[in-house]
Image (cartoon, rainbow, N blue to C red; front, top):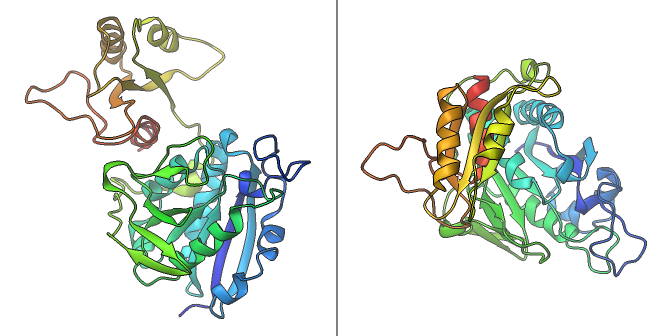
Amino acid sequence: MGKKVVVLGTGGTIAGRSERGSDNVGYKAGQVGVQSLLQDIAPLQAALQGRTLVAEQVAQVDSKDMGFAVWAVLAQRCAQHLQDAEVDAVLITHGTDTLEETAFFLEQVLPPALLQAKPLVLTCAMRPASALTPDGPQNVLDAVAVALDGTARGVLVVCAGAVHSARLVQKSHTYRVDAFDSGDAGPLAVVEEGRVRWFGVSASTTPSHAVDLQAWAKVAWPRVEIVMNYVGASGAMVRSLARPDDTVAPLRGLVVAGTGNGTLHVDLEAALLEVQAQGVQVVRASRCARGQVVQGEATAALPHSRGLSPVKARIALTLQLMA
């Protein structure tokens, strides 16, 4: 057994404050430091089972403003702590809005050997720390229980007593405390009074290439955008995004959130095929919350996302372009 549990703070609602305890939406995220946040959770010391808690503030942002620069630093800090023989597990406190993207990114870039040896658990809150009944403290306790459970491995997300895999988790509700879902598969486990009851085991996606985290912190990431199909969708947005513009980096990739089984309006599809012929890599996903694009017998002109949601398909495509 190691001696430490590391918690990396990035801000978010869990560290948010409002002027009134009854206000669960008019708060400002990322106001409470991770050290103070953890100190206010009285049962946390007992939950650590004798281990030392190490808190580190990596960032203090509203997760809607999360960016590649923070990701690069966060990935480096995770790798360093996971490599430490004295560390049993690493936790991250994060905002809910982009938590699923950060979780998937970390699963893709961190060495598989590290993630198979120790769990990396992300947790969050839907109510700010100043709320009359904040959900953050219980989520942190549940995340610690999962992190110290012998079955846990890979990158996991813990919220409202449910444990989700990084690949499948999606924010599915705007307001409820149980805001996350894993689609058709359901959660991997639930936490009940500090005990973890497992239904399945996380199947981590192994990165297809070696990642130099330090080098990535210094380079410009390729520009990859997302467009959506809808009634009357035209190709105007696609052509506009691909048009040369001195104020932004050239477009390298496009993910399209298609309707249903990745279906596309004829005009939108024509524009996507045009930019694909010009060298922009295009991936087709679905805007549906459940299911995935099912490939037909014929080879599609636009490759599908292999079950990834549009935002996660964008991450996968970005990493592919950086390889």
